[in-house]
Length: 177
Length: 182
Ligand SMILES: [Zn+2]
Image (cartoon, rainbow over all chains, first blue to last red; front, top):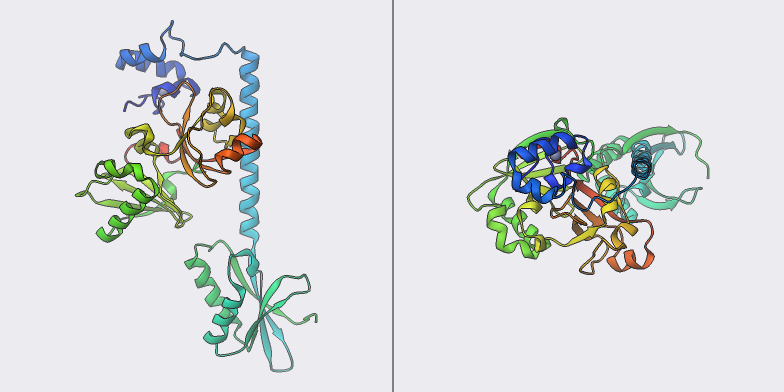
């Protein structure tokens, strides 16, 4: 396999690079037979359509536009991913008792009931899946185990390769019923 | 996908265990059965695969410094373009785009359905959504990209609208620009 000594692509793709002129010189000098094959007539690439300069520029603009659109979309998705987090809320139930609510788990592909069970057995307490006022599933854990839950989730996310999702432990005094 | 990839994204290199090497070999053959007769050139029995770990759980696997395949998360193994160039065309499933699509692909865009259905294009075999394909181009001999079908080839023909193939690797992207030796 021969690659262009100038732009590194297979020489048949040199015409799409920015160094086409230098690429051609290199190929003619180093691989004359291949040069003949790729540029059979007067050094013009075979199959190059006789597009006008205007048409060519229009295509270039279209390429740039589409690439920009796709990049913007990818960036938006990344930003969304980075801004996503799982909230571990420590909620005062009465004077000395707290419960822990884990919200935002819908962002990761996780079996809620199974996760609740894991929490229950891990922290030797009760845990269940309930619906938040917004209609999203949350896990409610009895007992003041916010830090343990946070620690577990951080480790879990990193194991799943989701370390870009943040876990935040917050105090939540005013729990809406 | 790896348009802006650079050497700085590499975090570590290590030789992999021979048991892991065997299972990767098996997995690669499972994914691309036609590679079986070439597998000893691709992953020579006596040579050691190196795992080059990068950001975002991307791993590049090299043999004697040359990129063989890469893997992100635990997804399927993606053959490198230089590997595809070394092997016969029918080793990997492939599609061919029309000439007009080349510029878009080399600019880092995905492939729109019309680029796969017009006169210069070809989809010789029916594939399901998610299939990895080598991407060839009208009037060109060598593959210019590796991509994944966003919809089945039948749907690409039928709908002929929207993105048909997401481009994973292309000539001149960050992975390509790491050079023949990583
Ligand atoms: Zn060149």
